[in-house]
Amino acid sequence: MSNPAEPQAVQARYARRDAAQDALRYQLMASASALQAQQERLRALVRLWNAHGWSSLSDLAITEVGCGAGGNLQDLLRLGASPARLRGLELIAERAAQARAALPGAVRITEGDATLAPVTEGSQHAVLAFTLFSSLLDPTFRKHMAETLWRWVAPGGGVLVYDFIVDNPRNPDVRGVPLAELRRLFPHAQVQSRRTTLAPPIARRLPAAWLAPASALLYPLRTHRLTWLAKPA
Image (cartoon, rainbow, N blue to C red; front, side, top):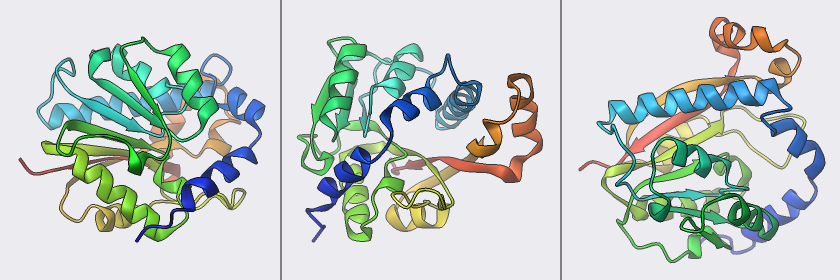
């Protein structure tokens, strides 16, 4: 049985964060490193889904778990996803409200514990979990979340995970998610994975013009993975 207290613990950990600092750190106009990370992640996403045989998102049902203020859903819209086929699930009420304000009304935003969300089994072509598993510190609840997402996915679809692969010694509220753990969480998935995102403490100190070449040259210092966990058709 999963730990029912873990969603409340996530909310408490989130409340300890400096929201103003986070907004500045990840605001694309204000942070060259955040913009570089987003562009690099989107290119990797397109390559993974093209390799999976997808050339259009317009007919795909896609849900993001932990959608925050809706930035990733906005990216999917720019890539051609249909608003009526997008859904965001968000635990934090304030973030869910921000997503509703930022996105077209046809995009459904559901607030609360994602494992209790009314998503039909086998109904989704893709489920996104971006920096989701690293925020779940209870191993049993992590497994429960993974099993829930996997049930939602239709055969031929998959779960797309973007997360950091090492622990952050400055932040005890998160834990790294190495590829080996994703394989354990999704034991029946066909796995494709790409390292991405230059270590943020390094990237934030570099001039904007250096970010792309530094990320290419310092490949071992990329701290995140974008992993496509496909369900066999």
